[in-house]
Length: 225
Length: 413
Image 1 (cartoon, rainbow over the protein chains, first blue to last red):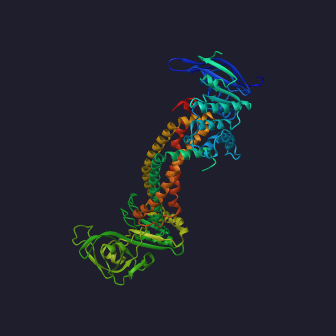
Image 2: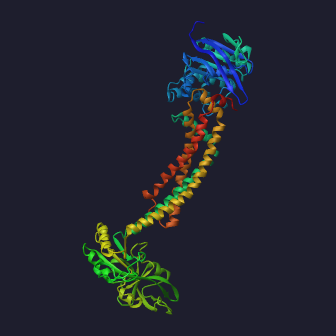
Image 3: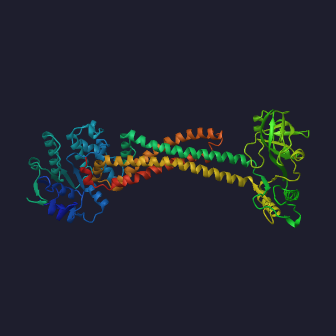
């Protein structure tokens, strides 16, 4: 892999303070993910894989250490700057899809675009993306609760791609899908990787991790392999 | 629907989704807006109606004996010429002369000295009380309009006010017994009979001469039976030019109250000011009571908004995780509370318009002033207050929503 590092963690520590004691969720993580890489993060429950994904996704900031996203250190960013970074550089695909129930499918895809451009879309990009992920045009005005899990995940992928992010983060993307749909979704994610996108995926299923080029295994907040 | 602002759309959709709950919360605002607006409209109509009635006599200066000011011990007035008695309960001849002298400084000024008392009356066995005015009959046509009958020609002829005529079923030619049947003390007046020659037009509220419930007789008839010749109870000066009022008042005050306050001088303007002030205070007090319902509504909106935040924690987490700023989350919830306010205020405004109209008609008896800007301005005012209260009620819930940790919010079910 010869691309430039798009994600870089240097001695990242994340400590959660509980009333009784402190929990070290990430323990001195140093990691580099290059542009165009497809990395799977595996580990048992509580191993810190989701915490690591949240750090990369800028949903949280490290207690200590440095995290660079697309060359930018997130340590000194305020909340608005972190939010803008999430909006512009990162596409999130969640296990339970996390579509906005009050918006129809097309609006769900359009939403990050509106956040960035501060106006409604007039380019037709959301519809094109929905078409690209294989969603029937007649369905685009439906609400998320009116379609199947697999279709929801397709919409979520379209939404994650709408702002053309540098990084695609997938948190157990097939966790709530049957095996046939899982294969379809993973094929789609692999296709995106082939187009040159950087993908970081958290999974506990070895079969799914196989789609990635590199697998990181975590245990007790550390990378063990 | 595409309103351009996605946060407004999200708010509208959430209100629609929880329509009944939102409507119930908005009803609180409706009640609050109706309460303050209707009371405001009614108060404004009362003030406008009183103002209109009193303004008709805006060029009248009223002079009455200053009984509260420790009136004259010993001779008072200018140059020792005044014959002010020990207790100034009337305006004397000397004072009247001074008033007449000042009146001559302007054109068309008219001085009306009058006697007045409240006396027992009896009409065909019906007993009661009425105000008796004793005025020079030559100037009476300048002061009142006769609806039925004519000016008295005989010495015992009188004019009666419309309310009095209605109450005692008086007609032209009716007889009224004035005074007391049995004279027991100095205050009692031996009974005498007068005959109605004319019934006056309704005059309404007036600061100078309240004739609706009064009997107007010639001053000679009055003093002949009630005594007190040249001891006037009130002197009115009708200014020919309304702009002279202040100057005349100043001159009168200087001439009559040079040494000490002997005569109270007031015009209908100052009276109007006092009445308006009293009505204003009363309206404000009633509105304050009405505002309590707005306070209750505010609590209800706050509660609904807190419920909305709690129900939508997960959604807030999603919105935050895909790049929605805190300020945008705040905006979304403030829009929602504003929407509840707008719904409540619009319904409230319509209800206030109808309610205010009915209330005004019921309380004042006329809706003549209802459509005047001074009255209708309470509708937008009530709406603005209602919406502002809703937005304020939404501030804390919106702030709480925006402060949610995206990771925690995403985890919630």
